[in-house]
Image (tube, rainbow, N blue to C red; front, side):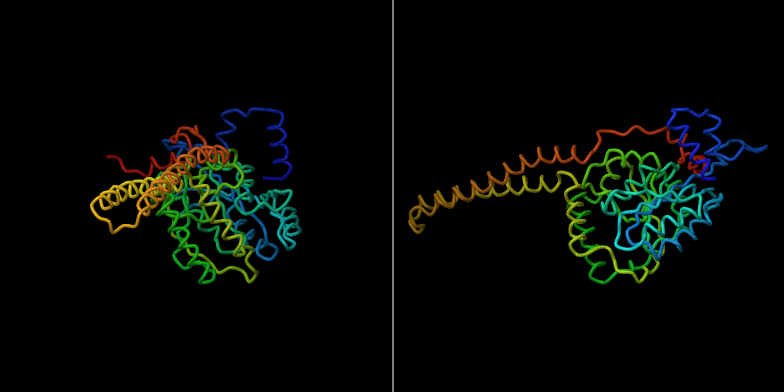
Length: 372
C-alpha cells in the first residue's frame, strides 16, 4: 500500500466516511474462487507488528529486513494465510539515535508507521501506544534487539487458530539470552506471580506475543497508568496459549533495564495483580486473632490453676495477640476497598464486548476441527 493511499484512508476515517460491507470484506479475504464452499477458506489474516523502540539504532534495520519478507500473503506451516500490513515503531526516547533510524526506515518502506511519544514512558506504555494505533486482525508485539524472529508469526497464528486462543505467548525452547542472575530473577518473579498472585491460572508471559486485534486495542484504550500489560490482557482475554520458539542472541548493546527498573517492573506486576495479596493480609490477621484468642484461653486457665506465670504477663500477652490479629484483619478489610479503587484506577473493565468469534479471525478454527 502506498503512503498516499494510507493518508487517503485516514482522511476518510476522520471525515466519518463509513466503508461498505464489500470494501471491508476485501480487506479480510481474497476474492472468492470458483469451486470454493466458503470465503473463510481464503481469509488473509492481517498482522500489525508493534515494536517499542528504546535502543534500536543498530538493530532495527535487520528487523525491518525480516519483516519486509512478510508484507505479501504468506502461508504458515498450518495452512493459514497471513500478511503483515504495518510495522509500528514506537519511539520511546532512548539514549541512542533510534529516532533518526526510524525516520530513514519510514522513508524507505511504506509499511512502516512511526509512533512518536512525547517522552520516555517505558516498554509497556510504548507497547500499548502501538497497539492503540494498530489496525490489523492480529497484533504481534516483539522486542527491537533481535531476540524475536518475525518468521515465527506463522507458528503463533497456527497455535491461536488451532486452540481457539485470543492470546499466544512465546515459550522459549532455549535459555533467554540474558545473564544468569537476570534469568534466575525472572523465573523467581514469575513463580511468585503464578503461585501467590494468580493461583496458577496463567502459564507464562513474554514480550513476544500475539493477541487478537480487537482485544489488544481495547486493552490499550482502558488500561490505566502503571498497569502491567500482561495482567491487563488477562482481564479480558481467554486462557493464553504458548508457542515454542527459539530465542536469538541479543545485540552487543547494553540492556536498557537496570536493577532498579527491573524491580519497579516486578512491583507493577504485584500491584496490578488484584486483591489476592491483600486478602492474604486479611487471612493472616484472622489467623493471628484466632491464635491469640486460643492462646489467651490457655493462659487464663493456666493462671487460675497455677501460680508459675508472673502476675500481669498473661493479660499483656493476650492483649498483644488479639490486638495484633484485629489490626491485621482490619487492615485487610481496608485493603479490599483500596484494591477496588486501584482496579478502577488501572482501568479493569466489568466486561468487554467483541464480535462473534465465527465472524472474526478465529473462524478459521471451524475448518480445522474435524466433524464429530
